[in-house]
Image (cartoon, rainbow, N blue to C red; front, side, top):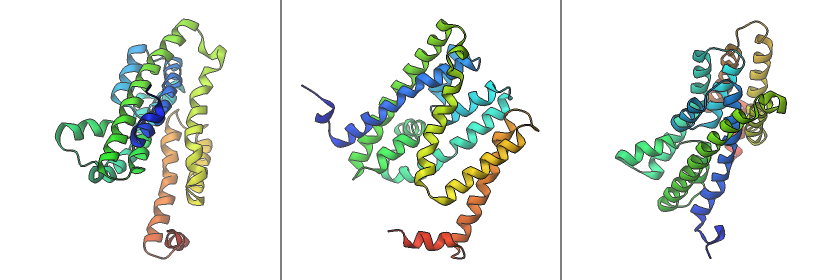
Amino acid sequence: MITPFSFPPPARDGLSVGLVGLSGLVFGTTAATAGLSAAQACVLSLLCFTGASQFALVGVIASGGSLAAGTMGALLLGARNTLYGLRLADILDWRGGRKLVAAHGLIDETAAVTLAQNGRSDARTGFTVAFASLFLMWNLTTLIGVLAVEQIGDPNAFGLDAVGPALFLALLWPRLRDEGARTRLVASLGVLIALASTPLLPAGVPVLLAAVAALAGMRDQDAAAAGDGPAHAEQEARP
């Protein structure tokens, strides 16, 4: 009898992370609540496949923002996947078509599984299983979520409009807890900018403006690299 414990560790890690794809159910309901059709939500999950960016896009649209503002916010959030690509390119060492397919699966979860493995073979197995299981689960549950909302009528009556933001905060919280004081300072500054500008600017624009807070973190990193700031001492102390 085959059980999850009988798979090799890289495959087991990938399958475990694949369960995160169940959150596609929440994205499906959020997208439908924002006014997207089943086809639009499913195409977005198929082609975009990065949860935070997708939630950001439909969140801006749901609040009355423009598609351009929502797309810009999604691109800003998805830019971190480029950094994952630079890190994983040497580890996976795929070429041609496989490299292109792998680029579509570069998200937080697949990067975490890959970097946790020892050796190229295990890294490839972990990435492949995590990508496949997440992709299938995310897209399937997106469709189920959209269709469920179409059946129940007004999703706001069940409080489903609050599920998307709540999940986004749940995904963000571990990073704020683990990444240190500098990350929490940047996040707090971003929240303040968004709250202060929301009454004054069109929907969606405060989200983009909040990204200015990241400049404070980048400036601090530059100072650390030059050895002039307290962050440098912190980095030197790390193993």
